[in-house]
Length: 472
Image 1 (cartoon, rainbow, N blue to C red):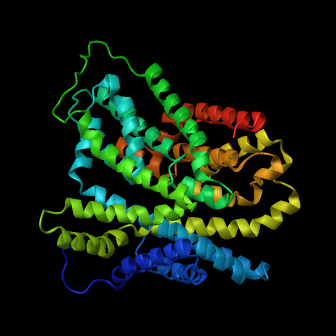
Image 2: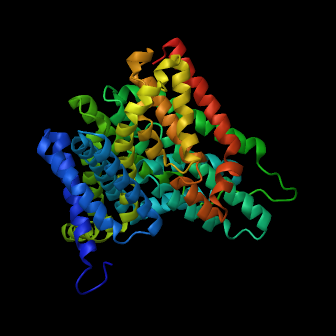
């Protein structure tokens, strides 16, 4: 798009600036407490959804249809339907704005030579350390790039395996590399403030202090990464007569990953420092510091002497071309948030009347249920975002069942992570299926079936111990 001349399509011309305005409104609300700003964002949200719906695949319009049906249902059943629909619009506006903030960092990373070199180095490690290198690398890449980490490392890994002449060996190698990437990525979902699992969990748990919850969430991440490495080590294929690869310096040394580590230190150090110094929610901090870091990264990438002009060009391209390029992702994330928010409101009276709430269970059983409900919803076509938000009516208040918000947070993010791995409809699974040239169900059930069960059992035992022994 950036190279075209002449008038731009009206929807493209509107979408980028509209999303930027949405981000500004949400940021003003989170940093200044301005109620009018989030109300304006809630009004802008359905307009942007309508603009995005003009040019998305027909299957994506199903989310819009479901959202409209819920509005009609709210009108028919709720006297306060205007307030409930507006609240759902405002929550969804925040989700869309947050995704826009994360997209700026991915835009900066896409053109970073140091990030590309780091990915190449990890993808070309010898077999003895390739799995752990890719898992650790995907975990680090996933913090700034989110799903872009799978796309980047997945493409580099499949390209590195293409030179293998033996088809059987090549297929084994691709499968193991892709699983290492997915499992490293998934481990990030349990704790990173840039992950939507953490974002939504903090929205559902207003009393949560993220900095206190992170150490417990990192244990979940360690469990999942450790189980993945153990399964790969135990069941890796052993093909007789195959020579052992040796390390090569063609793609650099371990110093190649220092730029990525520096980015993580700056990003997380700034977020944690501001969180501790100001007491603000970490999601509010991320809304601002991620775009600021991206802008600084734009400037660094520019030629010396012309960096100001280059920064202006990159920022303009981001707004004009790249943000509209995420139209399907914006629509899916925004509508999943809206359906979950309004759907949960409409379901709450029904659930409460039937008594099917988790607060009737022992604390440990309620937490275990939270771990498994999201992956079960994923088998029915729900994204983790949709499944988690729809669960809102049955999520017990931590004090009611005698646990901390941290315990519920660990269960929710653990369940989200299992859903991202096991659902044939989740974005990580779809990406792996594309790179591995296999159906999504093959990735979910054959590649990850045993891993999901073992990880789920380990997380269930972990959250049960937290509840029973009061560890958090």
